Amino acid sequence: MMYSSTTRCLAASKWHPSSAGSARRLSVVTSLMYPSASARHHYRFVSLSLYKPQVICPITTFNAIVQRSHSSSSLNEQPPSATYSKLSNTTIQAITTTSKTDDETRVKILPLGDGIVHVLLSRPKKMNSLDMGMFESIAEAAMMLKEDRDVRVVIVSGEGRAFCTGLDAKSVALSGPTKSLNRLLERPSGYGGECGLGNLAQDVGYLWRQLPVPVIAVLHGMCFGGGMQLALGADMRFSTPDCRLSIMEARWGLIPDMSASITLRELVRIDVAKELTMTGRIISGLEGEKIGLVTRCVDQPMEEAMKVAKEIVERSPDSVAATKELFQSTWVADDEKCLKTETDLQIKLIKTNNQVAASGRQFGVKLPYFRRKD
Image 1 (cartoon, one colour):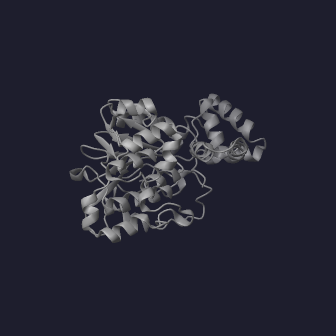
Image 2 (cartoon, one colour):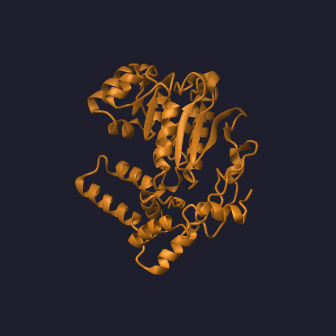
Image 3 (tube, one colour):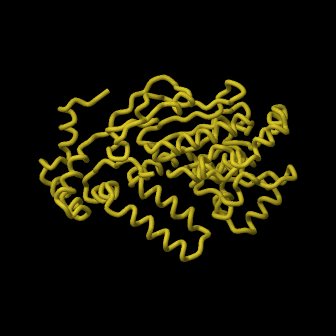
């Protein structure tokens, strides 16, 4: 489905140089960031491209999408309208990840438009508890989204009565306890790529930190054990006030071993982390907000997540990715590391196409963003 040349020109005329006001604003922005006339001319030309409309067709399986080939040599040079996106231009309505041992769907990946993607934990009859298929599917989904540079924001939620109630111990035991334990604990898991650090149990939470886009967890019902640690891997957590939260491993004589040692230290004091972990106490979303586990408590957390996601996609994908990298790489670092990282990341952003586009929007000129840089 393509726009006609007439439609393209009409749409572009809203800020095309033939419009005096828009031309002046565009000239100011491009002159500030591109001193040379040739650079200004180039940016004004490529900025006329429009986003290709999304076309929807029936469900495509996860494996079919992963195997698609994206061989465009101009991927790093063209705006989004000129290249293919795994989510927006492969004509999919949803992607489902299924267990390697059965055909039950575990995770659904639903594009919501504007680069916002909804990851839905889909094992509602078991309150989205973690069996081996769920572990594999969540890790697989995270890595698939990490590789798609058209993804701008990821929202993770649970289908049914709960976000996730943690380990499905019975299912894991029935699938062969020794084999399952070895798979969960062997390092690396194979999902983190060449630089993978975690085992499969850890990657369910840790991999979301590796995505160069914001990840928002939407919590309701219950969020226990491994489910809590999965949520802690997100950048933000929006919860209903009555959601029940717990780092529950102490009740089974265990410790939280799904990356909580990294994620908890960024959110709560060490004494709070110890108290919650040693007792396995269940707290409400409201208490979680007070102590820092929850970003915000609202009656409709999914609506709140969408509101924030839409605000984020108005910003440069490069600056959003750099912001996530900045804070995650410096939160517990020394001063020298913090200051150096700020400078290094800023240098990469200054005078890039997306920085010009973001600046243009402050002058009332809505220039299209280019794909996020790797």
